[in-house]
Image (cartoon, rainbow, N blue to C red):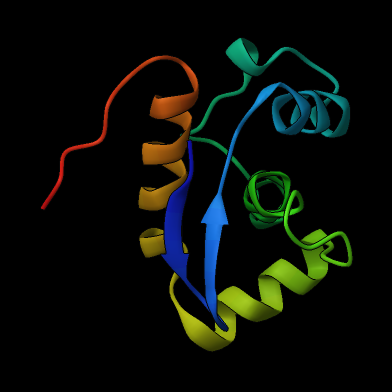
Length: 96
């Protein structure tokens, strides 16, 4: 399942097994050990990148930072990341 997010264009966050594995490799620990309340901007960009790279193989965490800075806010995108992570682990997203 995807969660749409408006950035430079409409993009879709997805946190399947591959994306979660990318995050775990970059952080060097299990997803369950990552403190979402204590992440650096680079770590936040890595999290966003992992959810977007499935549809744009050219993305990098640095490019994600540029896109967020130019087209959205960290808070707005992280709210979408939270929705997508919730879906990845069997939750649901409320329709507004």
